[in-house]
Length: 350
Image 1: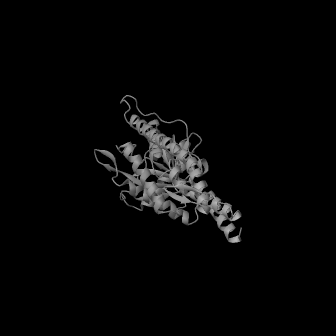
Image 2: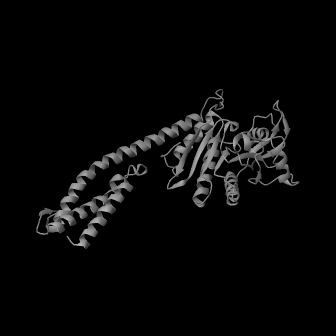
Image 3: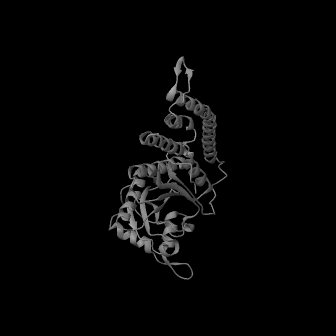
């Protein structure tokens, strides 16, 4: 067997093995038959070339589709037919995999619909346990999107907290049951009785307003974390104008939520580019507290905007964005949206 023939055989074998491993990955389930067709061809050609080169006087003959086949072609045909016999078994596996995926997606959709059709008297309940769930982007193991359940006051070790604020950038009073109030209270300095003695974050936010009475919807102002840096390992608070107030009508969600998300993530990346180690972001469900918004639509919008940002900013220094789900209903809707999002991989769920 000449060195050239040996090299060609080795290349065919290595290419076949590499393609076989690639096509057998779990995220390519359901396409095994079509993806492994080239594998069988490479294996067959490699086997035929090796045998015919090692034993040049050998012959195998047969007929296929009315044509006589002999020599190297005969060897190739023999191995190709044997490979197709094995490969035909993968078709059934593909069909079962496709049926399983379809059933899983249908089940997720039904769970989401049921979660949004709860009886009126069955009010959402706060989630007591702080848990994390995350998925990587398809074809991008650098970035992940997920959710954190429970009260943000129990979230530890995330670099950036996003505060859903109004266009006047007026933080809630510390005794109100809002995200803004929680950040304001825990970020301030307190006495031994737990009373706020220095309104650290709210005062800094006023400075950032620089005398303005309001900002445009989607605007982002950055403050330090105050006491949250020591207690919760938070490095920055980003206040985004996600709700607008109207006298006599309360607050309503801003129209362009996508802009809110883009501005928040772009600002995190801008800060990270200056050397700040900002890798994880907690993003609340903007406007779903007092903004009278549609929960399902809001979650879908925030998720799509985050995916779009990562797709258009492949080098983003942000590693993971978590949607914050405070109630059981929010957690169910967020989990369903994450599982249904085609841009996210079903593997490596946390």
